[in-house]
Length: 493
Image (tube, rainbow, N blue to C red; front, side, top):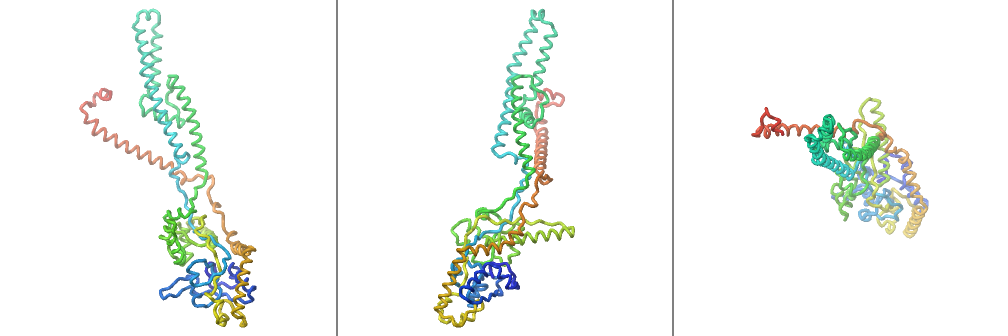
């Protein structure tokens, strides 16, 4: 029976637990007949069936074309393909048709150093860093060229003045000169722009300066820069701690656009399902249809989903059941590998896409025009439903109307949904939470890839700079006419 997960040799008692069998039991009570349920021999691979080259059908549709049954149970969708072969009853349920997709781990550990801040925050921090370095450099140049130059001229003029020599002791003049030299040494670390930016960056990383300038306006500016550095560094460290402590973010496919743009293949059983995507007017749906693969073995398709290379299309209840079975199989494989001391490759977590491709009405299938045929005797010999021989054409019509009324009452009373929940109860109970094995507050080497990436980038840039300096020395400095190795102080003056 398509839409179920039972094997061909499953006993009838287990099949009666299925939702569609409950609908047949309604028919038994309303029309007063005995339903004999059987499974077509090729239904496991063909499901509904498809059209062959000789205009014959396989699967369940083949049974309908061959008129081997009256009622057909198998998640029959309201499609033109089914209406061409069958008569469909009033829809008793709607199913969400969607995809079972693999979860992906957002492995961004190599970006660990930049994850604490967003893009605009990094732009603001870098802008203030370069702005602070240029401002400190400008202040140092201004102080040297104006303030210190004025002080130097004042001291020199006072030393040449004879009257000052008589009034001021020589030691006092010498102390002023030493103080001037001391102020000059404090400003030297900011006199070159590259050094100014480097020391400004070191203050941002809470690294102390080798020497604090004696100029008070620079001290005030550096003091407020320290306050800014404390705020930025504390925020960065807190965000970094949270990034390291939290588990790796999982990426799921929840919309048709995401699935259409993903590199994974999609597929399901039935050529009609592929044509549904190809004939759609939605560009994302058409894009999915171009990479749609028709597969007949569901277990292999679910294995491909677990490997992260496939997305399986089915109704949401079949997908929940398939996910629960795959999780149970994974637990069994893990225990077996643990007993044999073997390595176990964990499958991707299976995720059911939240967006429904379509909410498809589900109906019971009936033999094409069977209530209208004059030869009622042929209906008596059907395999699925055995009717008493006294049933006439008019009585058959009335019984069919009564059956539809009973189906409608079952839908309105919520019995269909109840039976469906009962069938899927085991799948809900067997499903494990997706985050049971998720690492929490654990830091391993995998999460420190960002530090290794930063170290590698630093070594690479350092090596490139070394090569550049060697080439610059060999092809530019040594070939300069002013270069003399015995008078390097004159050359670099």
